[in-house]
Length: 319
Image (tube, rainbow, N blue to C red; front, side, top):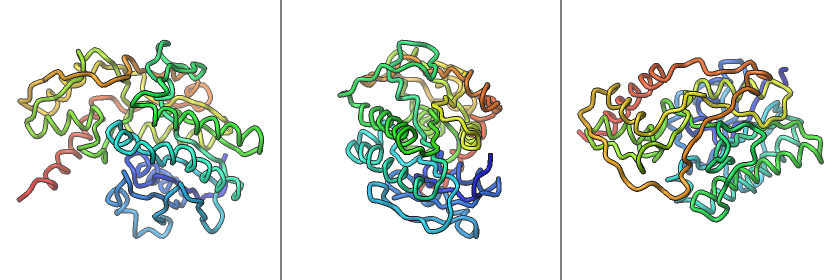
């Protein structure tokens, strides 16, 4: 199902957002990227700047936004996404999840566009059900250090659902699980960029807790393909998009040491409060309604990510 071939991507200069902009352009959909560059960077979209079908507008979604012309899709990805960022920017994270989501919904409504909310596996909190199906309501600490992100996304889902049911807006919710790939910041704070930076610079890899806590990691190209598949469907979601490949943090660290050929050692540090013990999506719904499943193997994805990080760290290294 194709609407007007023009999309707005909020948070489009971020890690996932910039890959989404590329993938939409590759499908012949022109893109307007909205970002305040609080956690994203213009470097992620610099290679798109000369294209006539791409436009960047520096905008803060906590203020109402206007985009001239027809729009068929509004993808709302604007938000801090790593714990390091949203704990440093707690109020801004709550504001973009609430006011920002409202303004993105208003934009979609004014254009008659399909609205896609990029939600997160964090709505499941530290899950008591494993793997996590979309029907699971979650186990979130509403006053814990991670709550600013978890609850912002949960509120965003509620607001999106309210617009769908009370205003008739065509909406969809995608719950994105742990995603990795090129353009993650080396100082992002999440496990894979941290481990890669440490391995490539010869530092100890710092694994939190005893390392038995798990994540399911999905390459960004597969994640973006799932987001677009949902947008092109008529399904309202929520739909989990993530890899069923579940790995412990200790095993992930060892894999990265092996793939990089690093001499780094693994060192264990305190585990953060409310850090989820397990994380793996039930992706049956994505397979059934979208025909989607990940294609990129973990080794293939990590190798391409290592290549990018190696180049990035060489550029950042002082002469």
